[in-house]
Every structure is written in C-alpha cells, then in structure tokens.
Image (tube, rainbow, N blue to C red; front, top):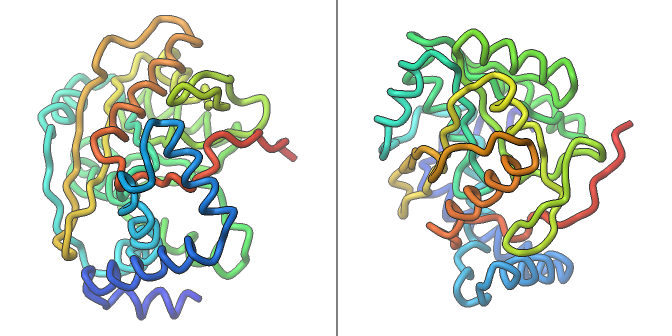
Length: 276
C-alpha cells in the first residue's frame, strides 16, 4: 500500500480530487448505513440533503488527497487570519489549534509546521494508529515530517502535549472526534447530546495556552486550500463543563461556514468505545 500511495502522490491534486469525488459517491450509493448516518446528522444541524449534497464528493476527495499531502510536492495554500496565529505565537503561552472534521484538516497542521516550526518549534498532534497493518505503516511513514510531532492517544501522549504547551509550542486537536469512554462528557452538538472530548478544554484551562480555531477549505479544480484562522468568538469559560460546551459551539460555527465540506457521515453521536 505504501508503494501505491507514493505513486498517487505524483498525480495532480485536481485529478485526485476528481477520482475522490467519484469514490465518495460510490461509497454513498453502495452503503445504506452511510446514507442514513449522513442524512440524519445533517438533519440534526438543520440541513436538507440538497443543501449538503457536495459533502458526499468531498468525503472522497479527503481520502484521495492524502497521498499527495503525505508524500507529494507541496500544494498551494492561502491564509486568512494568520495575524491571529502570529499574535498567539508571539505571546509564548502555547497554542491549541482546534479544527473539526471539516474540509482538509490534514493541511492545517502541515502548513502551520512549515511556516512556524523553524522559529517556534514543532506542532504536536495526536493520532490513532490504523487497525490495518498496511495502512498503519503508511501513516507511520507519512507522519515523520519536519516540524510535526505525533503522539499516541494515551496518557503519555497527553503529557507530551502539556510539555509542548508549557514550552510555548503548539498542539493540534479535532475536538469533534468521539473520545474513548471516560475521556469525555455528554454535551449538545447541533442540539443533540454528543459524547465530547474534554482534552482540548483541559489543556487550555491547565496551561493557559491560547486557543485558535482553524479549518482548511478545499478550493475547486485542485487549486489548493484556503486556511481560515480565528480566535474564539468569546473568552474561554473558566470551568471544564462550560469550556467543553463552548468549544462544541465554536466547531458548529466553523461547520456552518461551509457545511458542504463537513464529514456528515462521521459517527459523531455514537456511544464511546471502552478503552482496552
């Protein structure tokens, strides 16, 4: 599989996005369960299928752009709100970048690492190893990049994130990812109770780091990505439950900027799995 990924990495982004769109629609047509989850999650947020129809193709684009992002030549990126990032790094209090499953979240960490790691140190991100052995090897090789530290979803990984923040460096999280049992709280997400990670809020409250929300917009015709950075819409709550709820609302706000690129098929409202 690693060889296949390396071969695909030479393809133009526009071609990969075209093939990915076809793959996204094939997955949607072949899986009734996926269609139900997609429609149900979108409806909870107040969207009809017609309003979020492009998200079917974007889910496939997300998959097939990975070889290019992991192993290929750099892609074009445009930045909006980078003054927020400049100010956060200058404060030297550490940064917690928060992004939902919206657009291309892989490009956000890569771009931040490429621009800021030389002056401020690497960005640390968590990742869970793939269950398939072949894919796990691909991910392990892909994550070995300059300016980007990867840590496991474990207590050891959390400690490394805290250490990075206290040193004034940055970490990145997807706070709309369902955490293992015992590592979250049930709080509303688009009005529906969802098991939500407390890690992002704990890191911010424990270290005093600066929160920055970001998402990577996938531009049409393979023209690259636009990174949108912003501060929280209001100061972070000073208690855990309030901060977790606030972060969920911030993720909702980002998703509503472009619901056509959100992963509506993701099992956001599933029960948490037990940690082995």
